[in-house]
Amino acid sequence: MNFRNNPQLNKHGELIHLLSIEGLPRALIHQILDTAGTFLSVNDREVKKVPLLRGKSVFNLFFENSTRTRTTFEIAAKRLSADVINLDIARSSAAKGESLLDTIANLSAMHADMFVVRHSQSGAPYLIAQHCAPHVHVVNAGDGRHAHPTQGLLDMYTIRHYKKDFTNLTVAIVGDIVHSRVARSDIHALTTLGVPEVRAVGPKTLVPGDLREMGVRVCHDMAEGIRGADVIIMLRLQNERMSGAMLPSAGEFFKNYGLTQEKLALAKPDAIVMHPGPINRGVEIDSRVADGAQSVILPQVTFGIAVRMAVMSTIAGNSA
Amino acid sequence: MSSLQLDAEALYGDLLAGVRGLLRPQTVLVGIWSGGAWLAERLQRDLQLEGEFGVISSALHRDDFGSRGMTAGADHTRLPFEIEGRHIVLIDDVLFTGRTTRAVVNELFDFGRPASVILAVLVDRGGRELPIHPAYAAARITLPAAQRLSLVRDDAGRFSFDIRERTA
Image 1 (cartoon, helix red, strand yellow):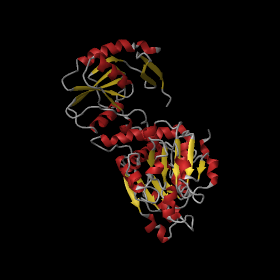
Image 2 (cartoon, helix red, strand yellow):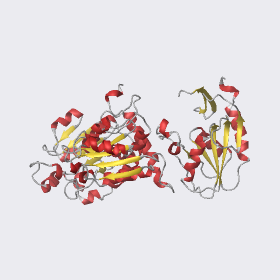
Image 3 (cartoon, chains in turn blue, brown):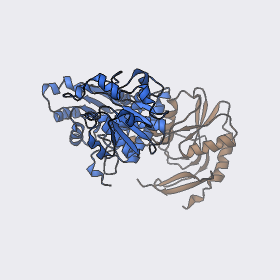
Image 4 (tube, chains in turn yellow, purple):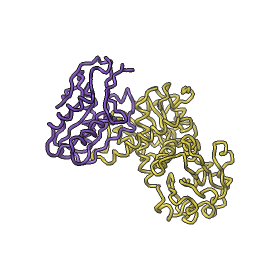
């Protein structure tokens, strides 16, 4: 395989940045998930910290708001003993007109070793990865509608934890797929890991038909979409990304596509319910489902820290 | 140096007797992943020790992380007992530079404060780069630094040695 076309991998096929799940080999994804398993057990120790990134500086660059993702990246970096610097870029240099690459050049002069980047523009983390020094690593923490690879990986960790094997699963992703970078990352990961049936469920305005080209079954009917599913991934209705009238109303959306106990009964009895958060109760998910026995929404958050530790330690240990 | 005249099974018999002599109340065996873990598993059985043995991985404390990268994967540390106040006998197949031993001692202390930690190995091949000394070694040999010696376990659970030139 020629890894030179994939900017995330060095010439040995090792991960040096995490920009997208698209193009990652299956074995590499499993390796990250295995490593995350090791880090999950660090929570059980008296000393909940390991020294792998001691002396390294991780800069969290969030050009777009986030609480959960930024916090879990911060916890993950601190558990790896890195020094963590959080920059609220939206309110600082970018607001004064500094270009993205000038910001990166300045932070590199402060001896950054890793950038964790969230940006509203798709491709911004790629641009940074192409222009930073060879020893600097970049993690995409969500870029536009494009990708959210650590969320995709933590979703895969969650599915593997509860279902063990990917190759006999039906996974339904429900809701606002057109605006969702989580959905795109999940679809790439699920198909790479050999899930035989991935369904995208939602109204025509939010679930584009061209998803079929990604090997996904498109369902505009909720009952058809979740019937017999092993895993249901609910997505947040992204009001802030909606332009124009893509939906009649949130109430109408809940009636048709909100996950209630009655609709969940159509899935397999041992189906798990996932959500990347933050959840909108009564918009895409009913409280009784979100807090119910089949919900694994909070374990996802815990697994997310271990997965981000795995990603950061893996890329930090490989050189360009 | 074909199989190096090292009979792993015969040396295991010596190790068994040597470790028996190191046991005291509150002792637990902890095998260093992977060869040492195989040895600890068999020692636990042959010594008829109560409870479980532990497995410890050096992956999270290695000093060559910067050059070798992340090596954690299947090799989780698994210590199914309290470390506090216990006498720990670390078991390894081959003792060389001592760097793996240093890393697992750090790993061990992330779980608590043992009363003591000693090391028993199948083969001490010399070449130490740290002040680490085994309490028991079934064999002491000298090998060129370029050669890699490691324990192999077959499907029947029998031990042998693999010796090869280091690739990097």
